[in-house]
Length: 518
Image 1: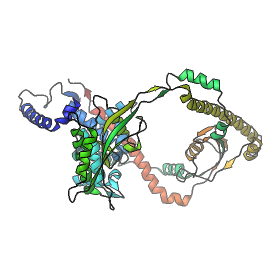
Image 2: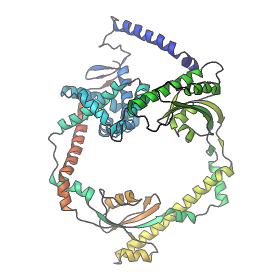
Image 3: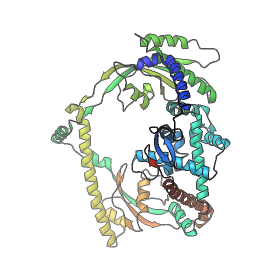
Image 4: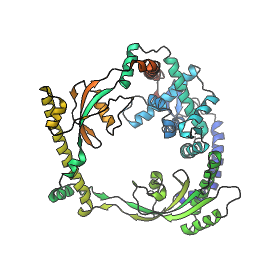
């Protein structure tokens, strides 16, 4: 069925277009369509007393999916977090986002807030995801349109709507929080939280040292294997033949519209190849050879494309091979192929090539033998033993240090007596962190402690540690004066965000959302 659709794609699209036009004319002129243009089965909800169609709702969910893509996420993070609201699940967050977006659009219209086309265009050009070297890169924009908008039936118009919604959100936030201010006490506290330095010392426990001394007995390994053998599996692996369409490397790489046009040409070539493979008895290598011959005679003035045919080694879905640009999307497509439908559509691999796959071999998932599973089981047992030994020693050292310190002995002397090293670190703050691999854990522990306090055992990437907060240093008053205005602005932004969330919840209730067709 899939092959038939690929093969007769163009005739089907013509028939489908005619059908849609005829259906639209009939429905548009139908005399019995009521309820503001929605049939009862089409209406799925009511907001502000107005019907919401299933089509509008589905489109809103797709817009939310676009908003969560990395090209937009960081620039619109506050907007995204606000519209998802206090949700306990991903689905609830998506639903909140859809309804809250509609509420914000309604309220923005009521407030007369309408971003101009110039504002929206400028914002799109300034999105980091669409820039290269600090300049708008049309190729990045084109790739985003191709990968995120077109598959959802969208174009640049929907992207402009999403960006416009974020601008409306920012302007509403300014209106709602116009009277918000930060008190001198709040400003000083906020500055100190980021800039006040702490003086700490640490006792480190290195996991590798404990693991080197750990042992895994053969009988324990066999016991663990028997307990887990039902779940110890070698994953399914696959091999695929592939043809890759790439641009020939040039001294000056293509950029902007030229690169976008070249990539569009590659997409067309790969789609033509995929369609050719739907023909009865089509041979992968023979079809590829035809396309290689075409590529060897490029149209004058156009970038030359390369057509490569090869086969991957066996790979699992979790470990895409280098031959496929380590693309998880391409690997996932490979694992959807079957003997009945062995050929893929055109797939984007990385940012500079398209590939078409053909399934060539399948290695079924199977149970691991004891010898195959043994190395991992030994490592697990050693890890467990090392972790237990390390935690036990850390508890004993902590108890010794606290006892000796309470008796008047310095913590440094107490550490020497306990056979450990007390490492004194340079003063640090959130704004000026330690150049230490365990900085986050040290900073988090110190923030929750009082001066002269010894922390409980803190897990780190290399093992664990005990943190001793000696003292907090006074803030730099001159630096505080310079940063006071900026700190106050950050506080105001936070308050405005909180106020806007409360306002949005109230407006959502006033919108009287009702689910269902009635």
